[in-house]
Length: 274
Image (spheres, rainbow, N blue to C red):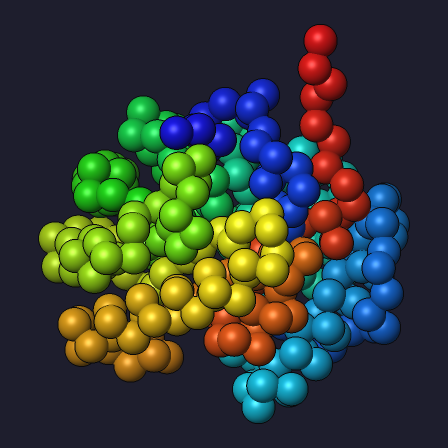
């Protein structure tokens, strides 16, 4: 299985086609498709926020329930700062090294979400290097949960918010626990990891967007099972699903956390293969 959290040189086809991610909702501008380069990024953010608000309203939801994580993978600190200066505070990164390098150059009140596959040997550098890491969205087995729990405690940090990643598409290339194992892993995080704060579930849809609704339905069903097993309300169990190409549909289907990258920051700047 790929380890995008540790090897910035390797990008999957799914990532290059989609990996767009999400921030926290505010009012915005018109829903135009904007290539966000330089000063265009703040305008693109406003458009995304407005589209998210409209999607929430179509579903009879309150827009404040939706968090937009602005995924800044491969983008320079200067552009991230422009979006920050426009009022946004929630950002996401896929790679440990990239996040550890960027975070110290940006304001401390940013809420960083780690959204890439995380290897155990990268847990300590991530936690030590990013004091304002707010959430890890990709806890996919007990081993990584235990490592996070131990190092959060060792570093004296406050409990770290965590989402259990579920492989709703059944693709071998995707990380995540199988839907049948999500309740057990959620229980482990909540009951056996005192330094982690179980907050919900996360998934990445298939590249074939026609399958996306089924992926989202699967995650919603997983939430129902987890809530029943753990005695939680749906409001206590977030759903992180939806990226640049499908975040409006995800919100209409119950997402509380969307991860928007390319629509805000423009096309990814991947290193060319030699």
